[in-house]
Length: 471
Image (cartoon, rainbow, N blue to C red; front, side, top):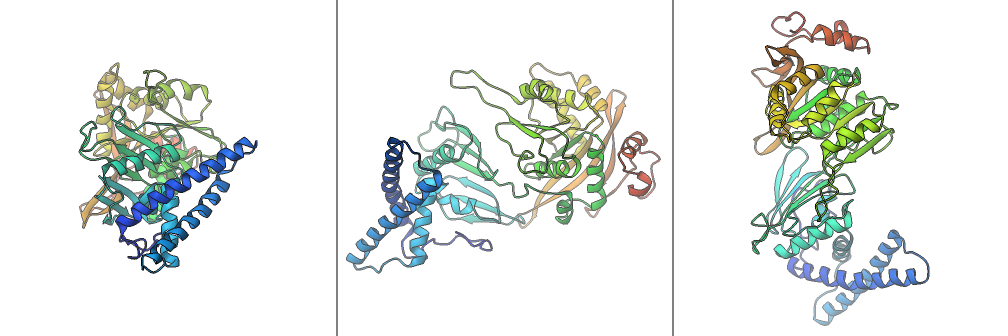
């Protein structure tokens, strides 16, 4: 196990076993132990009992110790010293990771300071740490075939759903037990994939129980801006979180939901293929149900899209609020239907270059939908929904370190000559700080006042001049 403070790759046995020899040893021991433990499981089943997962792992550890003892005897016969306790433990952990985990990538997955892992083939591994530091790591597989095997084992052992990974199914998207997201692309020298190398990316969600106070401490936005967004969502305003890839959109939406939604409210989340929001986990929002889309079977049947789930399931499950993990296309119409059909406040995320740009993205997705949704209909629905739009960015200009921050908070105020009217409430100044720009509209102030947020006490006076009611 890597020490949480360590941010450079290390030799797991500190040189006692060369890495290429360790790989051979791990696979040999894993194969032998796997067969023996499988027989124990079968013998237990034949006697009418079932070996628990924990008992199976205990049996595996016992067998691994025995195999490593035999390896030690072989080393000593060859004139080499026996493995130290440190190297013995490192080899044991490597075998267990090979059998039950993610193989050589397991140690990275369990490192508390790692956010993202990107594998561009077996020898090019890049790790992003908390704070944005990026480090090139040591190889995690001997060759492309071994990397593909690792990905398949991860899918088989750690995924919530049964999946395939081959030339016919070249993309793999699954959720790991700790909530991390694993995405892989089939490729390599055989030429029957869609990439020049097998690719693997793991994105860890470190802030599963995040709050707005924590985002403020991380300098994502000022306290007054964060308090306003939470108060608006609590009051039933709709929320769109827009931004760059890896800018923290899901984390931000999760924080607002945890802070703004009352525990008695019934929440339905809808996401593509996996459940990254995690609002259903734990006891903070106990009446939450999580839905996720499903691709068609090999026979082309059984597909359930995000749009399908929003259109039907969310209507039948008696939600107070509906939270859609990410807008990707056809679900634009159904999401706006949810937004404009209730006063209780729902939310979503979307990729966009700016807060106002999120409106254009809704229009683009609407036009590209099947069937297309006219721009006029999109604009009318957005104006009726009157959401707050928060935009987040990720800046890597400082030595490659990633800084996540809010660039703008906009309110949709209605239609202006057929187009969606917006007012920027908070925006960046010349120094890059998020500062007040305009006042909140009168109508929104009144709605929020009914839920306890008073502009006169909680509002701000934008510089240089207060712009009336913000219209």
